[in-house]
Length: 355
Image 1 (tube, rainbow, N blue to C red):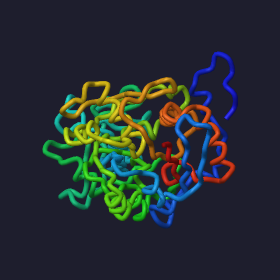
Image 2 (cartoon, rainbow, N blue to C red):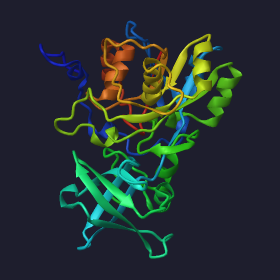
Image 3 (cartoon, rainbow, N blue to C red):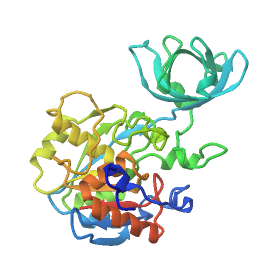
C-alpha cells in the first residue's frame, strides 16, 4: 500500500496490488481449515499467523460473539427477453412493494437492451406453463424493477430456478456448483434476504460454537441482508464512502446481551459490525431498520471490541471499516504481510482477527 499523496482521500491509503492468483476461487476443504492472521487492534502491528480453527482460543469467558444469521437466496435468474428471445440475466436484490406487491428491485444484463413493459421469461419446471414471467416496470440509475404475476411467492420461485449469486471475482463460466450452494452459506443462516454471504461467518462450524459455549462465551444474532454492494464494488466512478441502504434488525434479546456483556463484544464480519454500530447510532430500533453507514478511520466504535473478518477489495468500504477498527497503519502492514505470505483473499479466502 503506497503512501497517500497530499489531498488524496483515506480510501486511497487502502489500495494495494493483489495478484489474481491470490483471489480464492474455491472454498477450502473444510470450513475451519482457513488460515487466520491475528492483528492487535491499534497496536504495534502484532501479527500472529494461525488457523481459523484456533479462533475460540482467542476469546474469554464473559465475551459475546455476535453473528449475522441472514441467508443467501438463489437470486440470479437466467431467462429470455420477449419478444426476440435474447438472453437476459437478472439479479434480484430486494422486494419493492412501493412499485407493486410482487415487484422487486434488481440488477440485470444486458441492461441497455431492456425497456419498460418488456416481458422476461425464466424457465421454471415448477410452473404450469414451464415458465415464470416478470414485466419490466422501471429502469433507473443502473437498476430495474420487475413485477411478477399477482400472488407469486418470489423467494420460493427463486429457490426453484435461481442460482447462487457468486461475486464477480469468483469465476464460474458454467455457473455455480452444488458445493457453492452449500459453502457460500453460513451454518447458522436462517432468514432469507441476502444476495451475498456475510463471508467471515463461512469459516465457523457447529463444533466451534460448542467449544465457545464450553469456554463461557455467549453467542447472539443480528440480521443484516447484504445488498448490491458486492456486485458494484470497483466499478468506475463508484465512491467507496457510499453504500446502498441495507435492511437490518437487532433483536431486543441481542441488545440485552450486548448491554450486559462483562467481556468483549466480538463481531463476526463487517455486516454484524455495521448492524450493531448502526443500531447504537439510531437509538436501538425495536423493528427492522435501514442503514447506509460507512465507518471510516477516525470514527468511534460504540459497541464492537473485536472483529473477525476476511481480506477485502482494495479501497472498498469494507476495508475502510477494517482500517477504522484496527488502525490504518496496522491494517496496511497486515495486508502487505498477507500478500507476502500468499494468503487467500475475498469471499472464499482466509481470515483476520482484530482484537
